[in-house]
Amino acid sequence: SDLISSAFSRSWISDFFGAPFWDNIPDKPFTNVSEFIADVSANKPSAGVVGRIFYELDTHLIWYDDGTEWVKMATADWEDMVNKPFNTLGGEFTVAAGELRIASIVRNKISDFFSSPFWDNIPDKPSVFPPEAHTHDISEISIPSLPDWTSEM
Image (tube, rainbow, N blue to C red; front, side, top):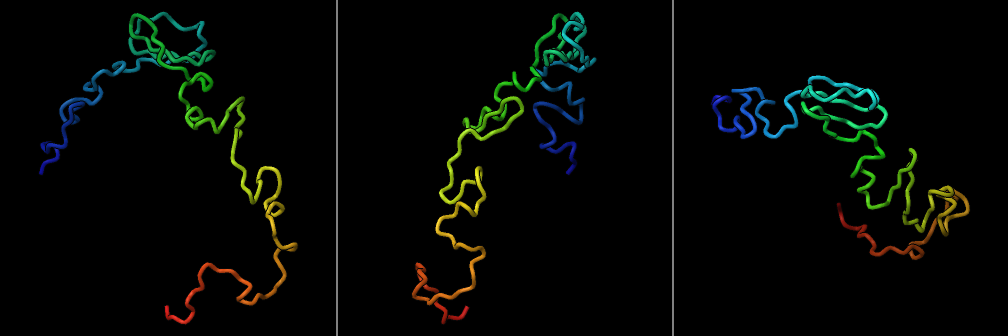
């Protein structure tokens, strides 16, 4: 079967084989980027050249020149972004001034890893680690069910 004539090679967005891809995308924001400018907002030129992108270094705003006016596209400043990842974690994390901390977390009954070493918080542990060698009679060990040691594996 010929790939070019096969049914899966066509899509409603584009005909890769018959025309350039970008020209066939509907509702795209612009045809192409004619120029990318990065400068402070006071130096943004007047609109009138379709396709220019202007990034304001002082405000972190991104603008698109549609030929008649500058259209605000986005904010590139982390603090101004909406729906950034930390806003979607159910309040368990807080980010401020470059600091990451866990706001609230359930403490483990065995250990508090955040304030002291693990071993110090284990209840009923041997006084020496590793414990000294010793033995126990099977009657001193509680096991929910004893394995059948007589059967072959």
